[in-house]
Length: 168
Image: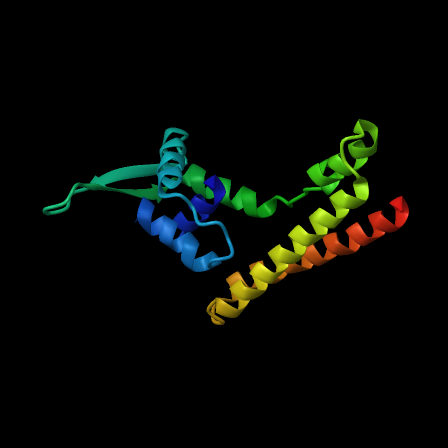
């Protein structure tokens, strides 16, 4: 969440709740909603590391709120994050480990594991389809997030089919 909060702060100063709302509005309901406590803990860490600066703003009849702004080091960190590529190979996939170890353990049938995982993916796909239908069509980022998740699930379903063919 560090990088996402820094990226949101490139627009200008904001307090924690505004940043939480910004993520929610941008990503829609398909993305796990950030916990406001996690947002504030992360902001505290970013401030300690010198990537943001906080300032208490007085409010009449309410507790003060803390507004954060990006430092030069924070701006550099965001720029570096955007420059980095994302490399997350799925060779450490937990399901695959279960599938590989099931025959050795004698405690699980690989085909039953595949069938359970397939049902889970199909249920998730149905849930994403409902989210896509309910999501604001104007929120292209949320729609792309849902579409990407569904394409990954379809690839996983195809791979499960391949695993079953090889193991039967």
